[in-house]
Amino acid sequence: MDMALELGLPADSLARTMTLQELLQWQTYARRRLLPSRRIEFYLAQIAQLIAITMGGASKAKLADFMLQPPREALPAGVDEEQHIEQMIEAFQFKPRNAK
Image (cartoon, rainbow, N blue to C red; front, side):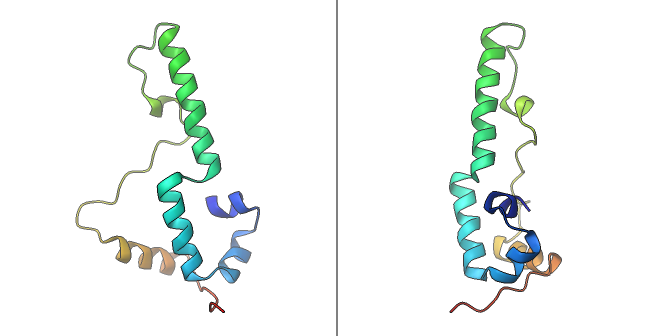
């Protein structure tokens, strides 16, 4: 859903038109650089944290305290990432089109 919002496309349309290779490329990009709105959220949270700490009263403030959504946890130990992707594809009934 986040990717559909970032690209300005309906999720259903994205599921019909995106290839599996494109999905994996987006996943790699998002893992390395985050999607733009998420990256901006981190930047704003860092600024808010810095202000709260320097203005006093929030010396133990964590970045997560200023995030709209806490960072996602890593996959549990023993869970294979490829298997996790396959499960997501099945859960969302993702049917990629054939690459040309």
